[in-house]
Length: 136
Length: 271
Image (cartoon, rainbow over all chains, first blue to last red; front, side, top):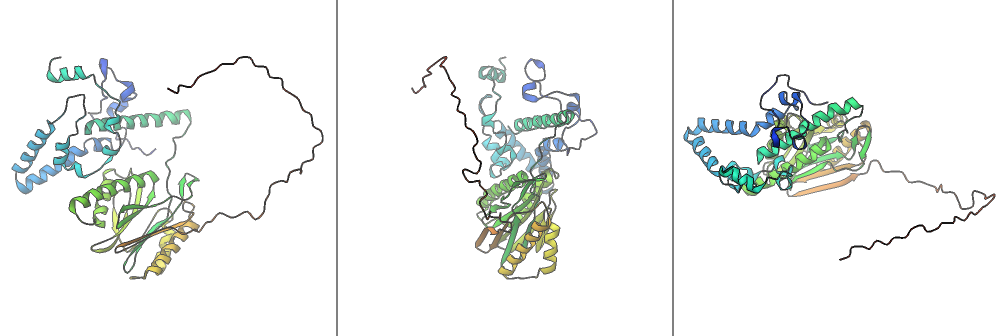
């Protein structure tokens, strides 16, 4: 069909390991060696790293125009905003991080599809908090 | 949370890829995407611009929608015609319309056509042509009327008259013959109507009615339908058989004796 497969095997596409250390077929689909080595869609790699690459490009442009302090300050602010979260099993709105990145003024597929309010993945609250606090 | 949603999207891509290979092994076909196989045009005249589109949506060789709307709203002064995969044009124009609204609220100004053009081309280039949306974007802003054609891979052209879709060659033939700079509104509407009609009657992928959208400073006329070029015919006679046409030769009545075997009552839960 329309998919052109990349012919060079790439790392970083290993399947998400579920509970019991085995491939979770219900959540992550069928496992196949090909899926772990080759991207199954021509855009998979580019989309996975899209935000990262955009940020890299923007920071490097900023560094060239305004000097090293500009991206440094911004990344420090991002790091601080990323730490503002609710407990692990509750959804955080990431409002501060979104405002800094400018995502509060744009709508994209991540906002329309895959609504986190309808996500089927639920963690055990007590265990998740214990894990986060290092008590596990 | 952005990475979480990306994970799930990628798993769906794996599933689709596996399904595609499995389905062809069994001998079935994946469902075909509904395309609009269209004629869409735009032309700039003296005080504004006219966008035109046909209204047929096809699914392979079948007409899926006899009267679909291909002129999409982007902002009060900008409209966009879409050809290609119907879902792609619909979602793309809606996303850009939302983003443009947020942007215009942030700047406090009426949005410009160049902004919509830039947003569309950046999004389509990001997806490398996998979003099958060929668009004719037109609108009126502080710098006058602007008309752009946007291709699925993200290239754009800014021109005084454009055509897109499977019927674009038929429509472009009409434009190349009769386009003049600084036309009057009625001439422009007639020209667009004729161009779309050429696409409708000479291309199988286009059909049904002609929709027009006239955008001038402070006024938008969304004429749907502007011209019903393919009205369904009216039956001139009644072809129903009259009662008593078939003669009855013999009549036998058999009574069926039904006996009650079991009777149960199930009460409704009305509490």
